[in-house]
Length: 517
Image (cartoon, rainbow, N blue to C red; front, side, top):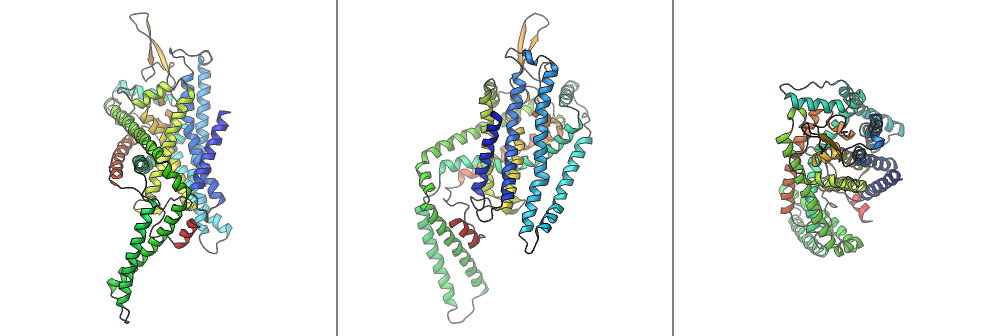
């Protein structure tokens, strides 16, 4: 019952989320369904992580002995394969969405914008462009199948034996390697999105909630004054040519800029008028204390994440097996607060599941905050804006693909925040000292006997290829740097406008009317 309920909640959340930002006038059924399903697949995939960790932990008692039903190795292997097949299925759907379905729907609606194009031509042209994505996917699968994994040279033998054991434990089937390489490649793109959007959103969202927005009445008064000043300047310029004399080139450019500015101010006035009448604005003002508390909570959570990520990366820098093994770390040498919290919550299954779900949702919301503030960019070119009830279908598809990639990278981020928890859960094993007959209980790590600790299948996809892990490691440092820069920028900024992002100079009156009416 829990699985269907969780899936229903995720689908409902995705539907509300997409409908909130979807353009009312350009709404399309296929793009809406595609966006909702793609986002749901990403969230369901991330929800498999705590289940994986719970299963490997549930096999053992707190004293380090296997439970009766898990004492047989074949039983444990069957459970591991079941989880692995779950990852196979969900990650295959992710590949299908990223490399075929989303590109196809995107290009289909791009072709729809052209005049006098039949449905058949739309489908043909969309398939033609989508083939390029399919070829990239096939290339990644082939590379993952045949890429060699030779041991790095001059590696400490003891450390490398541990790494070899891990790689062997992670499976040698070509299907695992091919799928892992493809997903790791997508996760690499997701890492760039996390560094760009999530790091900034994680610093901007809490401070935005704490600072609040400017007063609507004050903004309307300021808008009226600005409009009057611009109208006066336009009147003076037009008065120069009242006797038939033409304006100079400089005056014509100034007049054009002022008229554009006047149009923007008038659109802002219409939006401010709507915002002043909107009941949500009034409710938001009444809930101001709650927003401040929520902002403080999000800020503390962000600091906890950043502290845990910094400690984890520092631990890898000081105690890992090296750059040529993907900075694989054996055990935790520095106390990581989030790792300890998850280990403490692990014996009670719903608590750690809820915590990881909160972490995932927090990543999604902070990512969305970053995307909304920055827009969707391709290098230095802004492709789309993300605005409530005014986002085009193509922009929604881009948004969902970015969020899907971000959620894929969330698994590695959680591993970076709590490596011990993600790798072994709360498993322990018994160790008998040679000198005495006493038996001690130790937390599972790479030094444990091969038959005493079970590695999560999540770790399989994260560390099948050590060079991806190396890139992820340096990506975490970049995330910390961007978060710090974003925090300083957000601290220096003033309060946001109540209609922040709703009006821009390049908007048309047509798009503005869509919102107002």
